[in-house]
Every structure is written in structure tokens, then in C-alpha cells.
Length: 315
Image 1: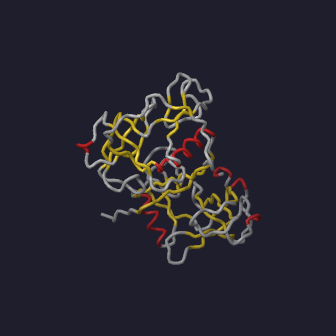
Image 2 (image 1 turned 180 degrees about the vertical axis):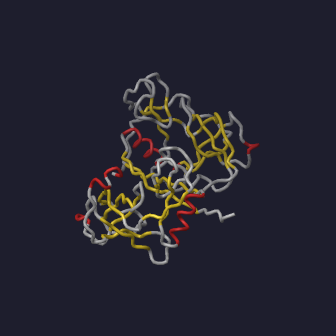
Image 3 (image 1 turned 135 degrees about the vertical axis):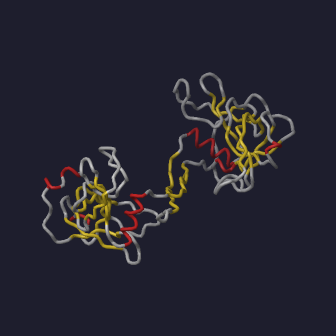
């Protein structure tokens, strides 16, 4: 049995967004140890606040202050915290309706075990030692046996010194990819600086990278076909934004390249030519990474450009 290939992969990007007056007041308030909600058209106090009424879609702006104490409405135990979660020891995810609020806020509850958590238990906010104007300014909730806060929230203007006007929310997905038979053969061929696809037994098209089945006919593919190494640029884009952790100077060109003998264009970077001279029909060849098992980029071969009719079906 052939070795099963697998590799850890990470998809990560920072999501930057500006804040409207309601979200700005809410996050700035957390920095100042103040929890704000917004009153909806039917009088319900929404915490966390939203900018538009979820029923009427009207714009909301009637801010009120609610208590830092509340009641657990439901919960789930988390025995194995993951990276960047609120606590690094086992904890409960809880929905807490703060005193004065009509909706529940999701956060972590610091508890010694699941037996110590129950629906209806009283809790309060544990504030972070350092607060910057983010939901993490609430470090977590903790059990609370004191007096409840006022049931009627107090009006609040939502005005603070140095308000938070924007946030950066990092998004990240860690996973392990295990390719199937077709992709494993494709990857192993790259180690030998070859590119292989698979031919559909029905339509006879050659797909690169192979997928193990024809996306058009839906039948399994098994016949391996070596393609390239040269190919034709079918279409392309000019990249002007530098990616994090990618040591490539902008601008550069990223293209769809139809390798000779393939019926599907793959992606590749074009180098060895000024970015503003890259064009559809340009004939290119691979430049392999030193000591690696993948193509670093494609460069012009010096051949005449391919006629459009030879690759128009792959654009």
C-alpha cells in the first residue's frame, strides 16, 4: 500500500473593519468597564448592541448601560481549550443575559468543572487587567452570589474620550490535508520535476491537477498523462498588494497557464519579464525551486505567442 500523504495547512488573514457609532460605543465602553446595549423598537435591550433592528430593520441608536452581572441561560463545557480562546484551562461557553438586558451575550465562564455550571446560575464579568476596546476586555465570567444589578438599564450617551473607531479581527483556520490517490500521484511526480494529470475515459480530457474523477462527466479517472512542461498563459492578473509572509515584490503577475496536453489551466506566477509585458498567449516554461518539489514560477520561452483559437476554450 502506498504511503498516505498529509500536511498541516493554515489559512490566515487579518480582517479590518471600521465601526459605526453603536459598535464604537460598545467596544469603547468595555475599555472603560461599561457594558452598553441598544434599545430596539419594541423596547428590548439588545446586548451586544446592533446597528439595525432585527425585526423592523430601522436604524438604532438609543444606548443604555446594563449591569456587569447576569444569569446563565445555557452553556456547554469545553474540556480542551484551543489556541487564542479566552482561557487556557477547561471552561464553559455560556450565554449570559446581563441584568437589564433582553438578549444574551456569549463568552467564557471560569468554573472548576461542569458540575459547577448550571442554567440559571448567577455570574459577573471579570474584567481584563489591560483593556484596549475589544470583546477580550471581558476576560471571562465568574460565579457570583451577590445582589443583582438594576433591572432597568440607565440611559447613556455613548460618548467617551478617545473612542475606538476600528478593529482588526484575525481569521485563521488550521487543518490537516490528506490528498487522495490522484493528488498523491501528482505530488510525487512533482518531486521528479514532472507534471501529470489524468484522462477522462469518456470525454478524453486531461485534468491537471487530477481530481480522481472527471468534473464534467462524473466518471472515475485512472489513466495518467504527463503534460507540459511548457504551456500558454490564458489569462492573468497583476498583483499590487504585498501578502504577509510572501517574499515577492509587487507588482507581480499571477496567471492561468494551460500546460501543453492539458485541458484545464492551473495557477502560476510569471517572472523573467516585466509585469506590463505579460499577455494572453504568452508561451512559458517552469522554473523549479531549488531543493523543493514545486514550481517557483514560469518564465517566457521565447516562442511566438500561441494563437487565441488554440486556448480560447480554457480562458
